Image: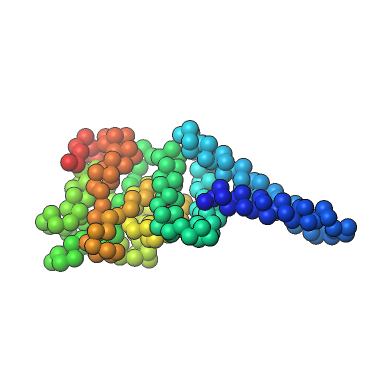
Amino acid sequence: MVSLCLLFLTAVLALFIVRLQSRIFVSHFDRLSLNVLISVVLSLSFIWLLTLLLDSFSLSVRKFYRPLKWLLFFVYYPLGRAMSWLLRIRKEDYQTSFLNFQNRMFLLNAAFSQSSRLLLLLPHCLQFHDCRIRITRDIKDCEQCGRCDICNLKQLSEVYDISVGIANGGTLARKIVHDAKPDVIIAVACHRDLTDGVRESWKYPVYAILNERPHGPCFDTRVDVNQVNNIIEAIFNHGTHGKNGNSRMT
C-alpha cells in the first residue's frame, strides 16, 4: 500500500510538471513549491525502497533504527492507510501487515541483551471473565486455575524474571510503560490497541503480538503463549536470562 501510494503521488507530480511546462508564465512560488514536493516524494520513495531491500535481505540498520521507525509509524503508515482505504482493503488486514513489518524491523535492528529490562504488556481481557480474582496490575495475584492464558504467562514471568503489566486501556498502558521504563516491550492486544500503542511508544523497541478473539472483542481473549516464549528467548539469547532461563514452556 505504501508503494502504491508513493507511485500515485509520483504520477500526480508528473502531471503537474507537464501542466506547468505548458504554461507560458510560471511564478517562482509555483516552481519552488513543485521542487519541494518533488524532493520530498523522491526522498520518501528512495528511503522506502531502501527499507524494503534491507528487509528482503535481512540487513540491519541499527544506527538509523529510531528515525526509520518514526518515518514508518508517522509517514509511511498514514500513506499506506489512505491507499488501503481507497482500495477498500480491510483496516485489520492493513494493520496486521504493518505490525508484521515492524516486528521484522524489531528483530533485525533492536539492541537488547541478557541484562535488558523487559516489560510484557497484556490486556485485561485475557483473564477469564468469571474469575473471582480480578487481575488489575499484578499478575502475581493469579491463582493459576488454568481457565485462561494468564496462568501460563505468569509462569513465563517467573521463569524469565521479567516485569508484567496488565492494562484495561491505553491510558493505563502508557502509565505502566512510563513507570517501568523498560528497554524492550512485548505487547499483546487487539489490532487497534496494538497499532496505536506501538505508534505511541515508538521510542521503545516493541514486539507486537495480536491476541485471538474466539468469543469476540474484549472478552475471554487468548494469546499464543509459545510465541511469547519464543520472542523472550530471542531477546534474552535463547533463554539464558533469569534464574531459570534454560526452561521452556510447553
